[in-house]
Image (cartoon, rainbow, N blue to C red; front, side, top):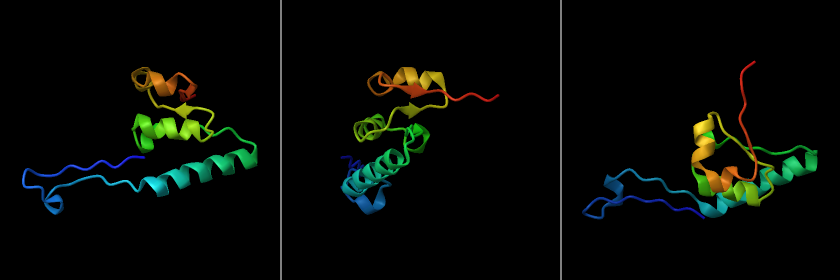
Amino acid sequence: MINIMKSSAKGALEDTPYLLIDGAKMGRNILKMANVARGSGVALRPHVKTHKIPSIAKEQLEAGARGITVARYPRRKSWPLVASKTSLLPTRL
């Protein structure tokens, strides 16, 4: 799972902005959403704009997501490992 932390030169985390992801909780949420979609008979294609982290998208795919949704084609091309399974590029009509 993911734990991303940035510390200052002094090592004082309270003085430096950082992102801390509860990996266990995120994993449970990913599995829960995959199970809800599977139980409802729908294909889950989470939108990567919510996190923009390829390793999280990979976890979503491994949990059962049919693919990912990207807003722009360049983002799909920049994530070859994740986007190679399937990706959806929605367009306005």
